[in-house]
Length: 290
Image (cartoon, rainbow, N blue to C red):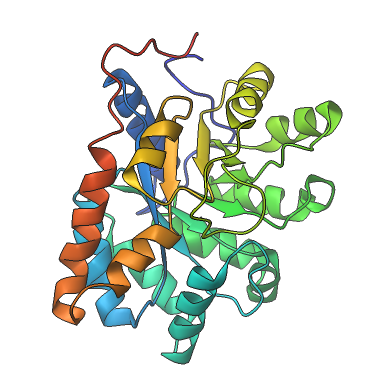
């Protein structure tokens, strides 16, 4: 893998200029430190907008990438923990303006921001409008777990015009021909599931994960993120041996929910992120081949 990773889109104009480059730089820096980057997931507006901002600001001090979820009523890839968190955000009055406010609030933080969105709410909001508004708020890219590459042209055009990365979640069953097409359209990184099924697993990582990541590396020079099923620091460390980005969501939400009260939630989130980060450095571990 090259030290300078490929991007597919120019940076947007305006206040968010350079957000995708910032994401690339964050990953280049962690690679130079011989460690995986840590990405933490939080649904925007969870458990309510004011508290969500407090948690995000606390996380941004100790994590490399913030993955902000766009709450949706039918999150097909998400297990019970994230489903419940998203439902709570919606019940608390989530609006897209809260997502944009959350992104803007992190503009001067050390962390880069990605948005995890399902396609239906994105489509309802309007693809061009969504890409423009998210880019102008400062999002580096959008993770789209339910958008097939065969149906992605409309979004890809909007994202490219706005200057954002599009990050695809790639299943191990993906054919070589389809993987080539995904890699040619993707930017920022590829997202590899650590387990089969939905988010929130507390079991072992899939034993075929290392071989799958190697297959992705043979197909692209983009960084590889591994998430879905990383539930503790030991698994984060395991993923960091093969991935450029280790992504944790449900386990973080469990740590937030276990806090004694709202005042303790931001620090509980940061403490959990610190515990994850501690194992991501790889002293004595050979770096991925260029």
